[in-house]
Amino acid sequence: MKQYLVTGCAGFIGAKVAEKLLAQGQGVVGIDDLNDYYDPSLKEWRLRQLQSHDNFQFTRGDVRDRKTVEALYQSHHFDATFNLAARAGVRASVEDPWIYYQTNTEGTLNLLECSRQYGVNKFMLASTSSIYGMTDTPFSVSNRTDTPLSPYAASKKAAEAMAYSYHYLYGIDVFIPRYFTVYGPAGRPDMSYFNFILKIDKGLPIDVFGDGGQSRDFTFVDDVADATVRGLALRGYHIYNVGNDRPVELLKMIRLLEQLMEKEVKINFHDRHPADNLITWADLSETEKLLNWKPGTPLETGLRKVLEWYRENREWLSKIKISS
Ligand SMILES: NC(=O)c1ccc[n+]([C@@H]2O[C@H](COP(=O)([O-])OP(=O)(O)OC[C@H]3O[C@@H](n4cnc5c(N)ncnc54)[C@H](O)[C@@H]3O)[C@@H](O)[C@H]2O)c1
Image 1 (cartoon, rainbow, N blue to C red):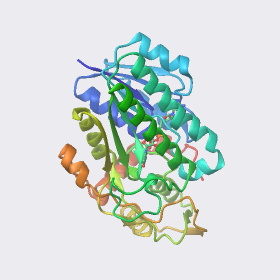
Image 2: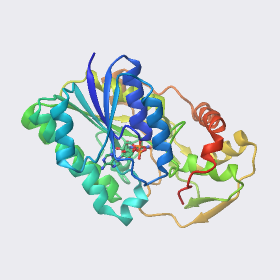
Image 3: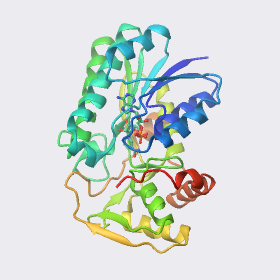
């Protein structure tokens, strides 16, 4: 049995990655600070699912704190680190860029440094399509990424570069999936599709920034966890896109929700935020070549699964704080 460290294990994607590793019979040590950037009851719910596995251990802690991180590497032998702990809101990063830099960049450095010190030779870093800014679509890994539109994207670019230095200097294998608008059951209530579901169900109007013509390459979380874990087979330093190659306009996604929830949606339009990309669209040629991976879930199928989970958990979800 291998043992993996998964940071941000109570997060939306981290929990899915941990679940996938546990389902393969591996051991997972998870760390998460369970902060309240969005309602922590979702993090607690995900954590409860993981805690039903014997091979899962949890530490509540902060990756910004070097001593906490070091204590983890001292007390376990890890075969790889999966770093999914992060502050992940594009617009929120404009309000408080410091916490984004400290968590996403310095937190990654703390983990890389411990990987070096304790001989953990594989490192996964969760990165983002936001890193492509306004460059040409579909976004290819060969696009320039030095013009990020937000401190969030900039903090991830810095983390990617730091991981390269550790690969170059110490031979650590590094794989970096760049995720494209991940959605799925038990997701993040600050993300559009889940925020909309919560509001539509309560008969509240939803907020759209811009004219709704912006497109997102919505990618289902199970596909994302699969593409992440497959990266373990890679040697060297690799960056690859994890998207759906099917960008969908926000308004189209809203109409789909309207249809699936059988409710009429009221929309309040607001000015577009300059930190938001107009379109995200993944070029998957590098991913297919490296991992023999393709996304398998069309948006409608994925949204049906989200709504199924939502209905099963509606009672407690109706009480969670809806992010604005
Ligand atoms: N969801 C997406 O569409 C998307 C897209 C691109 C990239 N990503 C990246 O994927 C990763 C996971 O994102 P997510 O959507 O699951 O977000 P999430 O917020 O649900 O998960 C992140 C987890 O990290 C934890 N965390 C934050 N700061 C921490 C700290 N200092 N110490 C310990 N734990 C901390 C949070 O409590 C949370 O549970 C992030 O790195 C994010 O940037 C996500």
